Image (cartoon, rainbow, N blue to C red; front, side):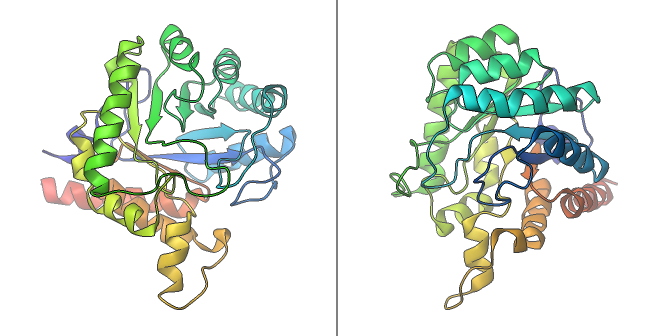
Length: 288
């Protein structure tokens, strides 16, 4: 099967001839990767537009850090951070994804022009999320999630990480479908770094073909994550800071694209935009 067919089509989204690039805008003071650089609305909108200029097909806007140990913000604060940025980017014609675990935030962001909901809990954190998404008709990213990460990694113990992630994702997707979200609007994400150590993340990336077996397009979100720091540090070294992991991120983007990922979610867009285009060109040469 060609990657074009494995990649899948998400109803309501453009059909790209390659792996799509989702750029990240964190409207938070405490993101692990950019530490509040885009915290006010004007800066965040400007940054989102810059990511599109660098090749982002979608921009993912989030107002709550999901890094290990991060405290949750309250709903009012998350709304204040996210909705104006979504509205500003959508008004400029940008395809906006909202990164939230709260149904109220998803609903308000969709009303402000977002076209996709990216919930790292896959609808588990807020029972109202699935009805809201189902009622809106928006596509929904279902990530593999084993609970909030306050205090560090949660239940990151696996006998067979690929089989267990696939099984748990399948169960979550079934719940989402039963809740009324259309099958052609479900995207799955293996949840790299969430209740997983570096070896788990690398093993999942080595076996993305097994996750295609779930029958839904695949989002890979590896950007700047801890496992890349571990790889770059080697056995004895200390991991480089998050913003020095972008070349490694682009390498993962190329490999994920080669394995048929629907999209990759990244902080630094230009190198990944180039990487997925090269992967597509090589795939095209193979098909000739």
